Length: 145
Image (cartoon, rainbow, N blue to C red):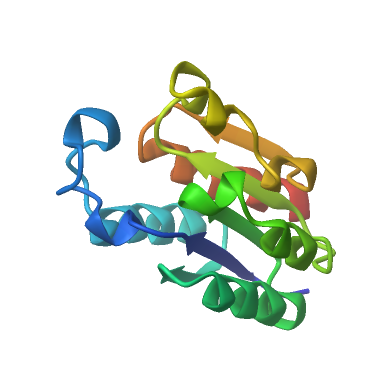
């Protein structure tokens, strides 16, 4: 069994810490990666951490996880609400998938209330800030232990 958890981030998350900090906080992608690595190591796992503004790259990493990943923690950003392609890719992955959103999407605009990813996810974490990633990594570790 693989001991690698893929942590995938969608569009605009490269601006984390700079874009709308009142919604998304002040932590950066580097901060989130460090938190995920620390949590994964507590459970004996490694992290493959990626961010892209391009849908096809996220899909390629999901496909890579089919061969190399124990689980996927994914914050698809705006692709959450629009991407059947990411949903289809996640359906090709046999391991657990945890969907993460930094903000509470259910307290935001109505279009953010729908998630294609949630139809595949084994768990959804929303509104816990960047700590939600840590919860997601811990949950994957618990599910595949």
